[in-house]
Image 1: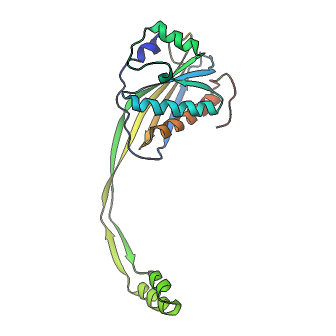
Image 2: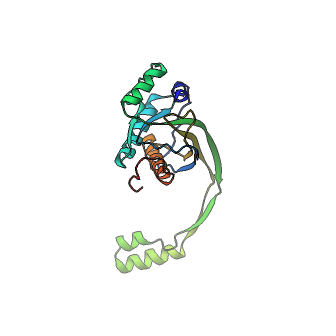
Image 3: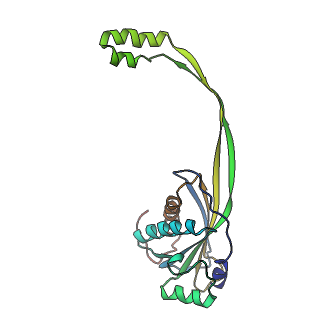
Length: 223
């Protein structure tokens, strides 16, 4: 547990944000020699900026709580501008009934670019709907529909570049009595925009994984 506390004061880099509906992937590992289960966890994202930490913690706590797993965000009982003695932090966790600390460490981002080639398509074919609705049934149909079909042309849209950003994070669950994490998850997030949405999706995946690996002291609700 001491190593966890010391890690809380390590800078973890900026949490970059770029777009909406971000897919999340999780690859996990559980220590087979550690069968300790948790009933209440403290969420501690080691991000450089507090404005990223707060919505991340809040969203993740919200999901865990809705599924019956008690949880609390680190900003609810720790001041990020203060370096607490280890014993003080341990006492705070104990007083809250926390038996597991879930750390999130930002590992960096990869940016990729891809080229979308030009696209050629025909125009005018089946294109007289404006005449159909605006000029009367027969006149619009004959002059718009057929006129559009036989009078169509060819249009080419130029190619363009698109970019994508993938974030990498590591999640580690520490439990009482063990200096090493009992569970580790490697997470990737593709093109995120809203950090609360990303955290909510991560919480869902982690919760489901913990169900499968019997990490929690109760069975929990379905995903």
